[in-house]
Length: 148
Ligand SMILES: [Zn+2]
Image 1 (cartoon, rainbow, N blue to C red):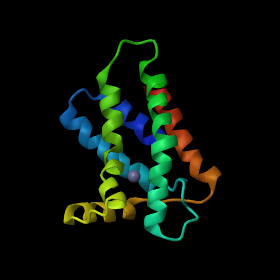
Image 2 (image 1 turned 90 degrees about the vertical axis):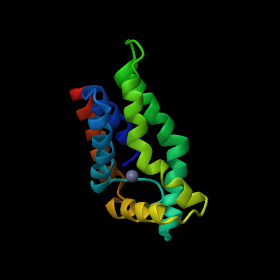
Image 3 (image 1 turned 135 degrees about the vertical axis):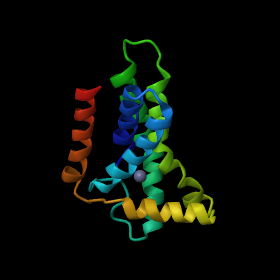
């Protein structure tokens, strides 16, 4: 999914479960579960899988990423004293995407990075249909609003 879904999911888990030894693994697992739900992200039409992942990453960096910070702020911080937990949750929810950076852009092909990238790509279910691909992400955000 997009960071606008992953980030607030991580923020929700971290703010509900104070123990980071429990919340951090759950947040990382939540990333892969959300990626399994067919969703829309940028780069669907590109033929090369790597190009597609690169485009998705750049879109994430300049659009999705700042928007996810704004949503976490609006959902978890506005009118409240600063709390580090939602931000910690936001960060760890995006770690699986951060870990792809060396693979996609630096041509780093270490064994673990390669295995991880293969697993992440395998776990990803995308749809080119914007409506059906964005709907589950909007539903995730509504659910977070209800549960927060
Ligand atoms: Zn992902």
